[in-house]
Length: 379
Length: 181
Image (cartoon, rainbow over all chains, first blue to last red; front, side, top):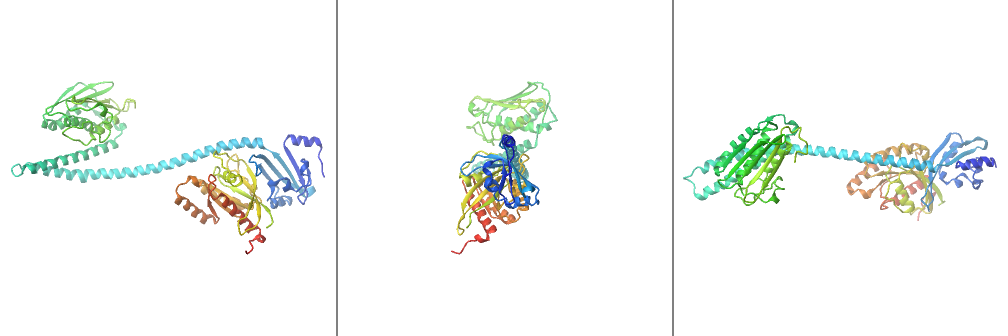
């Protein structure tokens, strides 16, 4: 049995290092752990069970050394681990092996923490990549849906609005054959005409929504003279107002031009005026006011119509909502929704004041330059 | 049959559940929180081989850390292994793709040792068809038994270890072939 000095053994023990030397038959013939002396390598170190061929290759010099870092050992009864690193090389004087075993629990636990953090970050990274892929797929689906929507819009424009216009014209012509129609037939034609008008209006609204989708506030480079815009809208809706004996009055003060989309703003104001006519009382009045306010313009449309409950105001800008429930006329429920969308797109604000039987006041504030208006301005 | 110790390795990407699978098999327990493995965890378990095999063997289980910069997988760990369990996470497609690399690296050191594939975390995949598609693909690609497992529920964990054990015995111990009953 080879022996090292007790001082060296103490130093190795302090450094948590154990060594052993085997003979050519795998028996331990020198070691700093006295309880291992005379035992086989695998009896002393069960972690090396199954490595007989590899250890033989080291003894024969076919493999210069084996380094097994951070081997954690536990038993069947306890899941607690202690970490050891093994360095195994040939020992020619005994034709056996020289094995150094160092306990590395402290450094292994530090490395474990590093590994833990790295792996958790890597898992997060994988998740982010997975979400990115899902987003890309969703984006593609949106593009496909957008294409379908564009197709539907084009279909509404060409295949629905045009035939509706033809039907409307035919019905109008038919209704003018006053002498040959019975009152029942005339009533039926009027009903068909109203239904056709509603259908056309709905198709028009859908096209308006599509125009809103196409527009962005960054594209608003055109100057809009709001007073001229108001006059054009009144001119368009004058016949409808006159039909019900409704007077449209204006109080237009000088205002600065704003940057915006003329067609969209005309539709927004047109929808508001259309509502004021539809839900007004016969022979009622509409007053349109225009003034400069807070680096923008304020448009107010006041009517003498049926008005509505304050609780209905919040849902007024939702699609297919109508505040006026007991009226002689029905709309698509999209007019104010579209107007609000257009105003918001211009980073403006829109709000309503109303009381039942006291009429309504719709306010639209638009900034002079939407690009300069903050998001807080819009609502 | 003579009682023998066989070293087996668990390989696969980090956080696929290798340690959880071992814990389920050896201690019949499951830990919810993820704890990264560093180096190798070695634990032994004696198992009775299923019929028609008679007798017990001890599996010396080397639970290797998934390869990361702080814990690279050393090929020397594979030396002397009688077989390997390759583990992937069904919820992470990249871990399924990496099985090929781990299989090849193990085969480079131990060319004849049998391998068994575990597709873990089945409890997190609701779509049975998805799982079966992966099983078919990997069975064809690796020519090794494939098990859909869950360390959480214990699904197929013992079956996978015992399958590897019998393959090892068949492969390494011709004398221990089952005798006619």
